[in-house]
Image (cartoon, rainbow, N blue to C red):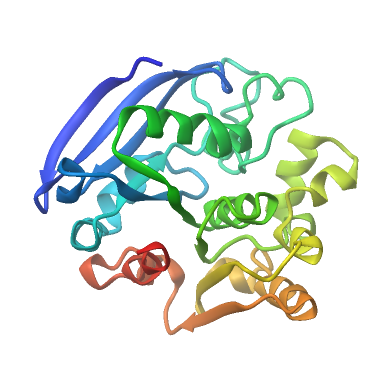
Length: 279
């Protein structure tokens, strides 16, 4: 599959690049960012996939998180895809900030008019890793995933639905129980219809109840002053209770700030804390 390089910038002796390609799953052009650490010039490196939240593009994590220094030091390839298909000319795709463009929710839609293009789950699970493996010095045996908010939800479900695929999963302020929160009900109702069993197939709190074993490193960071935590959009307590019932270990760290300020706080931002499990 042909890649078109959009940009390339040297950063901590590695290169932050952005590429565009024609996606088979999403039936549109997609962009992703990829950081290639200095070690990538001499051999394969483990890969960390970052999934961003509502309204974001691949640029959000690249420009705000300050991850490059740590990734360079530890020899990590970091891949940051976009959050939804773009420019599909679907009626209603740009009407709201929490559904449609910038809000793919990392599911494979089953409802019209979304099901042809909105297949972010399969894009992240299959198409993008194959693309990365074919074009970059990526060690596909050492792969982990993390994300923020909607992207934290995406990271959790991808790890839980694919045992053994990822060495670890980490999430900042993830939407942990979308079938119970306003964001999730709106997105799942639109993309998946009224069948609640389809919703539960993309809900981390439900998925962890049937996870086949306990061999998964799960880390969640949450800012205690996060407005969406208090608004009942994230529901981490529900996920933690389900993990406890199944005896699946999860590290939950409540930070003394809003998650966004903690995550995007520069070089000391919390993103550095979540990249260690695959080293």
